[in-house]
Amino acid sequence: MTIAIIVIVVLLVAVVGWAVLTYNGLVRLRNLVQEAWRQIDVELTRRHDLIGNLVETVKGYAAHERGTLEDVIRARAGAMAPGQSPAQQAESENILSQALGRLLAIAEAYPDLKANENFMALQSELTSTEDRIASARRYYNATVRDLNTKVETVPSNIIAGVFTVERAEYFEAVGEEREAPRVDFGQRDAVIPPPSGYAGAPDAGTPSSPAATAPAPQERDRPAP
Image 1 (cartoon, rainbow, N blue to C red):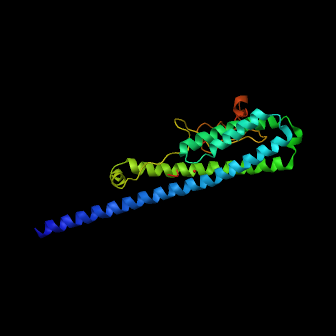
Image 2 (image 1 turned 180 degrees about the vertical axis):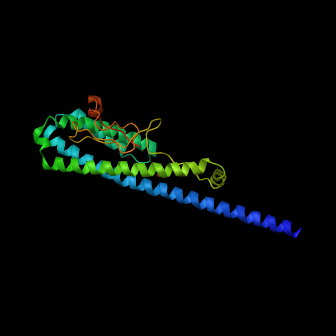
Image 3 (image 1 turned 180 degrees about the horizontal axis):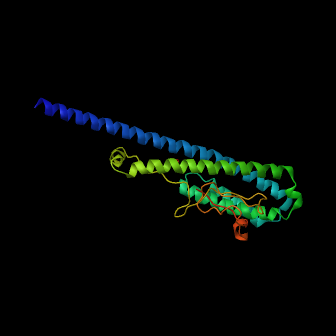
């Protein structure tokens, strides 16, 4: 009888210990997701500010391009709207990137604008911001994947259900795999190699097709969870 009680107590302690460790692990992952989202939020805010300044600069040289300028202003307002989920934010940023790409294509026809120091500085800052968004997006989606795996798999899903730890949303447009919105700043003729390890990367020395280097606004991979 004493042995049976000891065995039961040991099992209970083991179960409780496992539950505590699993819950703490879920909380840690949830906090990492929230921290990663805040970093994306900071970079997106900077992106929106830079785009606003870029629009004001273009206005001074191409004010008659009213339709394109208004498209960017509208898309920027949509991207800055509060309360969007990560997937909704990604879609808004994609729309903004497309509008901005059209604006920059128009800017190519204005040599004085392209030579403007403020315009060039904004382009450089925006390029750096796009790179940081892409990096932050990869980290955020990786932490979301780790959290969602724990929430969905047995037996950790039991603890997640008891303590209402829910799945987080990826920072990408719904139904599609997207990369962070990126804008081409005068590098339309350059062949940009894909990241190392990318399965679709062409072999060294294989010429790229014209379609591969055509200018197009790319789309992208901050609930806050």
